[in-house]
Length: 388
Image (cartoon, rainbow, N blue to C red; front, side, top):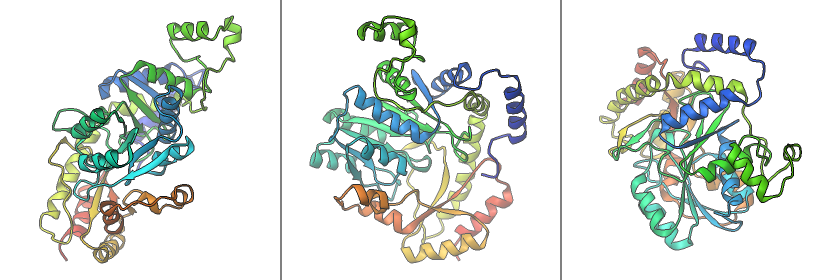
């Protein structure tokens, strides 16, 4: 991203005025307003705001553990092409993390990948990462998980706004789903994250986990129920009563304000990102050295970035040089094969065969795309993608 926000100047000016006028900047009404707006936008019943997408992931698994839906030692599958803070909570919570292979054709875990893992290892949950705006065949994955009693959770941090051909948005297939509002994502609140769900008890526990384990941000009805259950004698005692394990993952009112401000630009942002992606994608059809990403199951693509998947590792180095020489910043394909990360090797001793992710790891990279890109920017990338 060239800027922190969409419509940078107007957003910063509005933020300065908000800070000057706002008496209280710790989590409050503005955050709750953003939660309600985001839930409606995503089409889910509940949205719970956090100080980061990584915190949102950790809170989801703590909440599931608090509710007894998952337990220490459970085998949890995860998309092997993912981000560190998708896997670290599984280790931190004492689960058994099992990487699930991804298809180079879609960059994502597909139904055949997860079905094999379920049958071999008896997974209790699967944490799907919707990669770079793309996704697997989530309708089929959901059906398989329901059939086997496997809890489906989604990381939708990179795919906000993507819609499958079933007319369902990514992030709406799982029991819960996480979103990130870090800089360069579809929406920026500088730092920030969200969990969406249709399950009131899960949302209630997420709010307990988010704020130290207490009940201050619950509804009056929820507070009354908890206080009766645990025989909390008075409002005075309730101030410092902690009902379950939690963290301090609270956002600030600044996060809420920026979320509301940036949400109004989201549709325009997604449309522009899609247009840029389509222009770049057209070059791949004439270049036999590069793989095309299959998105035939996606109705609306909301790309986080533009993935480049070469057919050999040697070709990748050639395209590295092209992009670098043109002054285009490039990144690894997320974290590549998660099994090769130092922290994973330290805490997880079992190694699995993941040929799809290995290919992506060895042959892929991506460059950013964002709404402010000029025609000159786009043409520069196109020239790097063209046949030499």
